[in-house]
Image (cartoon, rainbow, N blue to C red; front, top):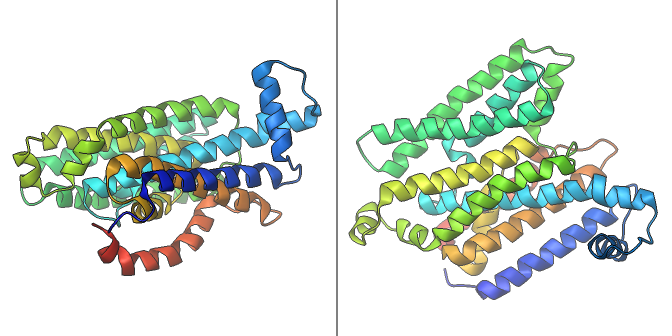
Length: 339
């Protein structure tokens, strides 16, 4: 499909949506903060001048709502970037970041941490490690099968390993304490940023930044890899090593996001496809546009989740409710828009 808005237009649209999302995120809630108050607080911190805001307003901006807004931006961008990378790698716009079992592995790691009553840092660490190990297992099994299309073999292996890990999650939920552990497991699996604080941002930012930089550095090679395997090799591309690098980088950002926010579906499936619809399939344009769209989308979803009812709605529920009709549209238009 031809480029609708161009790279610059896509970035401007994404930045505009992000500004709207940040504005709504700070202005909606029990303690609303306007854009002028936000700008004043940021300028005070950067310049060292005395702040004109109350201590309560500064606490909301820097200790409560600010870290949550930044975490939503990082997680949304990470899932969108990973989804775009996997869709390009497997040449399929209906692929999502958990196609190789990263979400299932992270879920099993986190549920194991909750089951042994570990602290939040250990739970997040186990989730992160579980996602990486799950994808490593999928890749090890998939590449050992010397038959057929390697991309198809990896997808099928991911489905099988993901089902096995899902069974492990179900087993731990079955034997967990129904009054304490089981509710915590269920809440984590549905996705939430409710417990995010400023100490969570650096462990989240590091892996996401590293994985995204790697994918940006490999952007033209990913374009070539979208060709059939024999054509990519004929152009001198080391497809095996490149595939490992893409999978590792995309899994790194996915695992970091899942470890921080739980399992949030649909972002990595729908957002890259919409970005491709706007700026085209060239990966150098797709990745920053998808990152901005993903950050804006999850930020708006998180704002809606904490403000639509007295009890916070899990993010995974809202992304599924909104994502289902979009996915139906995607199924009908994918053949026309993927080019």
